Image 1 (cartoon, rainbow, N blue to C red):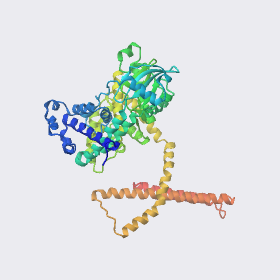
Image 2: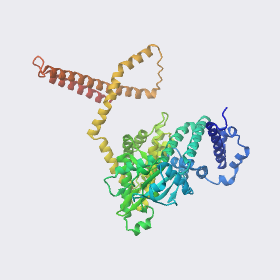
Image 3: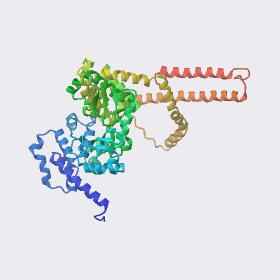
Image 4: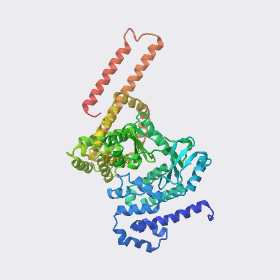
Length: 567
């Protein structure tokens, strides 16, 4: 039995109390039926009157999305952050909910300056005056996780100091733990929750929230993106002052520019809006398709303009990362969309995501064809890349194709980018700007040198497979002798299975021939080198003849396989 002073006991009490608050809020906004279906009404001993909120006409006048947004805002910072990150997942949520989640307000009243002072002094290990000759008590801005103050370092640099709210980390961790517990319970009680693997989604979002709370990570993100543009003076990333930065305090260069959505001021200062639109768009596509590491939230509040049409990106709490494979598939997707190639689009989205075994390819093809018709004969300048990508994510959601979170974050990034660019230049075509980046990426991917490098990097894997073949055959034979090999192949799949088997065997044959040829030739060359003799055996050029015969055999085998069409 735990005593009342036991920290574990106190943690469980806090969790139970917070669980009740969440369950009551669920019911208040018309989702009481979920609380009942999950059995939480009995588990938490909730009174029956709580569920009467479901019947209130005032609540039901609001849309489903509005009720979810209000519910998240009422429950505080952790839920607001969860909602904001969930708004980047069009592959999981319908449009009406996504639209409302994107309206989530992250502005809250500031916390007292004395609390900010205490946190800074505890984190930096000294008095505030030891580090700053000037520090404004009134914050420049305040959000759910922290607030920003203007300051001047003792060395004279003007800086913006972001300070995390007192005790916010513990409160957010508590809420995330409760969400994880609730998601596991939902999967046990609700079929749709199990189908969508809600616990995995909550786990992904929780990691993103905790990452965003770590200001050291945010500073590192800023440095990475700054390195991408070190040779481009027209793109500027604020400098991070690492001597004054910790997990809870972030000190960066203070930028006093014009917000990109302040169009009147941009015109007054003589900035060329068309140049700005193209420069911002090129910068984002450089991050996405060339570097593979990008700013995940380029909304107008995070982009400032300095003299000379210099673009400044700020706030790097949310970033995305694309692997080389994901970059290549996205480039294929862009080109397939431009060419209105249904097969290419399907190939790209299936490669980008985890396609369920039971997916109906005919229905999937029909849905992509519908999208093709939507964009057919539409001038390229009128095509919204963000909308097109999000339409594809909706198809992926319908067919339960699981896409990497960074890829869906990219969809939101492109949509935000288009909104910013089109306000600056209504005639801009994001697709046209993206095309050269996609083509460059594909050229680099299929360049002979790059292909050779990939083959060499994979050769050790092929070697391991060849070495393991005798062992695997012995194991299969032993199992077959015991009669423990249940095989179930439906007739429609038989021909496809046999074709794949032929391809595998043919590729294996080529690998074995190449390996054997390499071993024999290496042996002959090493032998003649050690013997100090020329490559002549019994006055016959053995190495040369052997090489010629082996090459003829190899090309004959290759020709036979290609002729069969089963490579």
